[in-house]
Image (tube, rainbow, N blue to C red; front, top):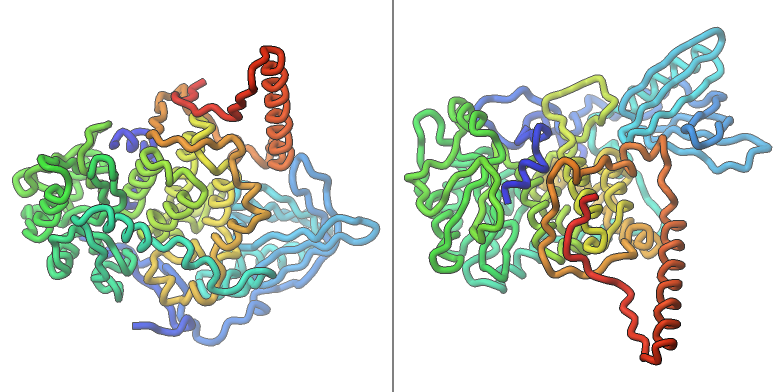
Amino acid sequence: MAWLIVWAVGTWGKDEAKRCPASSCPFWSPLSPRPTLPEPVPLGPRAPAGRMEFSELIRTGRAQAELLPGPEEPPLRGTLCVTGHHLLLSPGPPSTADLWLLLLRSVDSIEKRVAGDSGTITLRCKDLRVLQLDIEGVEATLDIARSIEALSSLESVITSFPFFYRPKGLRLGDAWHFHPPECYYKRVARETNAWRLSEVNQDFSLCPSYPRAVIVPRAVDDDALARSARFRQGGRFPVLCYHHAPSGTVLLRSSQPLTGPQKRRCAEDEDLLRAVLAGAHPGARGFIVDTRSAQAAKQARMTGGGTEAKAAYPGWKRLHRPLEREGACILVHGAEGRDSTLLVTSLAQLILDPLSRTITGFQELVEREWIQAGHPFQLRCAHSAFSHARPKHEAPTFLLFLDCVWQLGRQFPLSLEFGEGLLLALFEHAYASPFGTFLCNSEKERCLCEVRTRTHSLWSGLNQLKEQRKLRNPLYVLNPLAIWPSVEPQSLRLWQGLFLRWTRPPESSEVAWEKVKEAHKALIAHLLVRGEHDDVAPKVKTTVPETTAVVS
């Protein structure tokens, strides 16, 4: 399983780089304590001295402008308006074009130039679009640029667009209960008596970045979990994330143990991992997969972190190298356990579990292994490729995960029920979204900001019937087997549908769907004709399950 690290992490890995009203929701320090005190970073809204009005940041409300949206689209001329969350252009007569709208949160960087009595603003967006606005008037150009800069970089969570978005057909609260991780945990607890659902983190005091409920060995009580949490960075003690029913083995994740230079130990942490092996099949063994290099793990010990000592964890072997098909229990961690750890565990589940490859299963996987597991989306996705700022807490870890999933879909085109459309949607919404699903850095922050009661869930939007057709893979066939991809360099491809889609627009999903249906009809007609000619009752099998990866 750890060979996934070679494929997925590479040099990208950065591991790991009481109820209150939402109006008083400041997050000025990281929620996960480190062995060394980090530089404070604002994770959420600042406590304002007074009520902030968007009008205070809008220097010019409107101007005449021409938009150059891209190489494949004609220019659009009309009235440019700046609102609290959007930049919009209304085409004047005689144009019949629709209103053009851009969520300001999606702007990554701004470049402005003036010449004569006009100016140009170039907007580079987090979804990799590059837009050019030619604006009449130098003062209007500069004022609009300043307005966009201020409104696109607001730090407050509760002033972001999801708290104002009220689409028709959706109700607040819908779909927030659609993919609760507790459902998966309860299913695992029914499959085996060795595990139980614990609410030891109900108030988030044990681990600020974990959800309220986690699944742990039944033989370990909550007091032992609390002691184990104090021994792990940020309180992220080992928890189950996947149960492989056929073999009885499990996949776990955590953060690094705080052994330090004195090589500290924790009896409760050792007992927890011992209980994991005891709950599996007789003679079970385990591997601890460290997503860091051996050198990085050694350096971490000098700052209070470290690795599990061999003598303290009998039955568990620590690895920094590829591991495949061992049929053993696996614990994955790096430093914080919120980045490359989640990348490896989620990809492993996608490869092993057929249910995770369905649309619903994949959404559950993202919710459970990324959102609920504490990936700091607001920190990691604050900027994209065009930003001049390079804060150490930013990293495209979630984009790397989506790219790996796309590579899987390309090599196994029949095994994923969803297509590229779902991956592109998740990429866009992770960086800028009208929905609240990817807001904040943990479930604790989302609870404090009342995200679940004051914003809409992304899943409610994606699971509408009109959207499902765009997301579904028409070639999908349920494949009960594991899908092991080729990770050779020649087997990997550039994801043109994302990285080149604004310079080489992909074919419309509707057009592609119609082509697939026409080809399907032609195939059936051909097989029917051949069956009549051979005087044999036609037996049409419309799809053929794949058995090997496509590497060409």
